Image 1: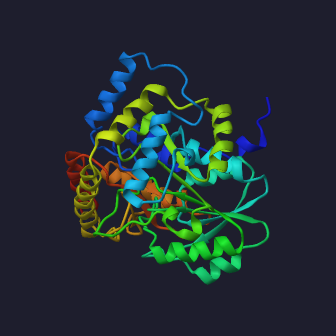
Image 2 (image 1 turned 45 degrees about the vertical axis):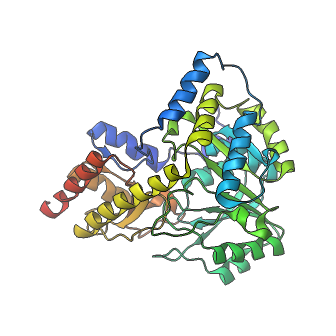
Length: 384
């Protein structure tokens, strides 16, 4: 049988490839964003209660009614955005939420602007629905945006801009001024903004986080994508959500019904209980714990000559691996795995043009004993 043109363009991600290689080598996986937090007991209890009570039938294609309300309440509690239940749809992970809303708002051939380094699944999703992607590089070490250049790159084919805030993989956290600059471009050109805010609670150095929906000019132009995979450490549950206008959510729910029918019912009850019963201190504690991990691990990277910046958000860091032998970033990360037993992701996973890149992404969201082991293994670089 002949494969479709759509599937021919979708290859196995570098993240998955390095995770497989890590398993083969019995290594320490710092490639995949697994997040090794304990699942909150209240979330597990809510799921068990739902299973015991037979909560096993379809929910609405919008998602569980009470969960949608709880998501709206949490959003308003943190950001005071006036979100209602009609603005919320629960889907099969943030990936599902992005896919269904992108299908709702974009047509084949539409152009979408993405900033490099980007998250690979954003690219794959957009390419799968036939969109054209215009990549715009951000400027390290702060991964700043040249807004004059951005404005010059918008054409009559451009329909949307996509940001990841905080960014996977760069750790960039968008400032309010940056979001206002994006708002001006979005409104001038009648664009849509997709804002992936999955790591909104992983913020460091006392930074104040600004959600795109907190910007007045973006309220009716934005789709916020987020979920529970990272903050509750339930990556395998595949529960995410979209927040947007009532009209977008209503249309996206029809696609949600077509592709997924509904997210897993008992798991929705689990995260519902978590949202309702976990205090705000849970979220701030997660950030504080990860800042400690960030500081320990990035110091260890710099100590062995893998230069890295102290990122402001999320739990990934791009480190300079130019001192590792290899003709390119892919060969270097494989050699790094051989030397240290640590699996990372080559930067080619996050750039359209990866020539001369010598960067690798490390995920430092690990249990303390694993993080300490990783720091010990890094010392092997100096002994090699």
